[in-house]
Length: 387
Image 1: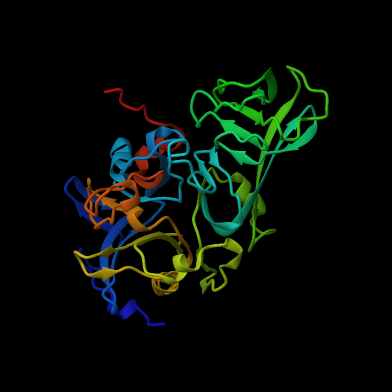
Image 2: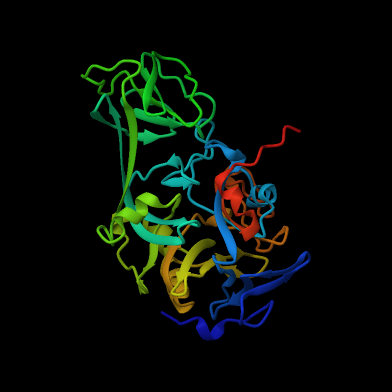
């Protein structure tokens, strides 16, 4: 595999202390540059120093359903920079729902349905983790454990679904189901089929008519707790507790680097072969030994002649940037890098969503870079405009 380090051409400023001049002034703790590899692959990069800037997650439309362009999400938060986040579902009933694990500011949007890569972090705890993870989700009703098959997904007759308040004001309706409403660690209501109001800060445990109903006495007022456990693969013992404490978790696939070494075997993540071996536009996030983050957006564009990258090429590229850990995020038409109120790459759009190449593809979620003074935004969701 060819090395890319010597081919890097800086387009904005020389390497040095992290600082970038924008129209609104100089931003300390962030650097942007552009690379063109020997294979004519155009890559846009930013390096972020978490000690000087805040890195947060945000979802489109501030709820689990729905999509928006990265630029729209970034502008709502007044972000300095932003990239697209994880994989998501599309379609009338599932549009924008995360396809894997997603936890934003301590609120669960989705869980891991198979063992796949993820990055987790806490700005307050100054913790960043990258691993291949799985989740184990249960509801305890009157001290007895019951499994959860999915979180914030349309109701299925033979499954039990846990809805959190980020899903919306009400659940989906499953005929002849049972809905257990939970708030403040207590059952506050038990209702049959229909769309059930989700209490603020609470849950609805929706049990389909063909799922296993609790063969256990439960009633309003009983204790009820929700437990979503994150199980890391590479550092199961060393980082187990840390994964439970981070308040942001973003799923991706596959994991590219772990402890500075390229991860060669992706079989556990169960990805289709063309996704690994074909060249596409890519988005990746990496972590350096000094704790700085690297964001990379690889173009696949006729305008620049950039062919995109394979997963192997992307892993080598991130290793040559001296990343200790790296994760592939959603790519293709979703790959977007936003800086200083503008999208600076050439997104590919999405044919299946009727977006032409020049359009910005609406995505589920985004990683945002904010001034450290705006770190309080990481604990709140801005109000959506009603105009």
